[in-house]
Image (cartoon, rainbow, N blue to C red; front, side, top):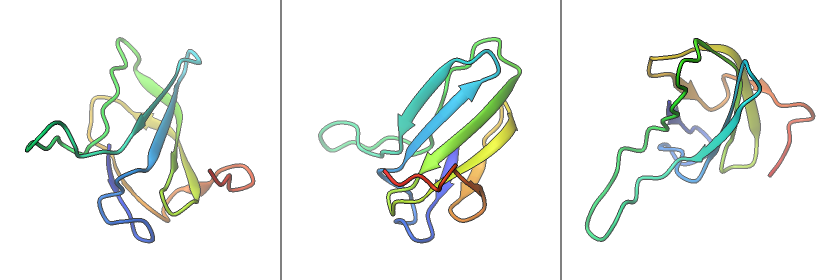
Length: 95
């Protein structure tokens, strides 16, 4: 996933992505670009889903504090998620 912040920093560094597969497996990753001394990593978030053909839902806890979710996303593709385009999480959970 490639995240784009609008209220959060543009690269969405520090935001937390939570993913649930159809079988109920839960995974989470934080958006980061650091690696090691004098190095950088790709800030896109990657999940290894094995044989899963579909994602049940995913949510992003943006660094600015809002939470948004997306449902039934495709796998084996780069998803572009822009802050403000998802559905508010239940009660718009603040971290």
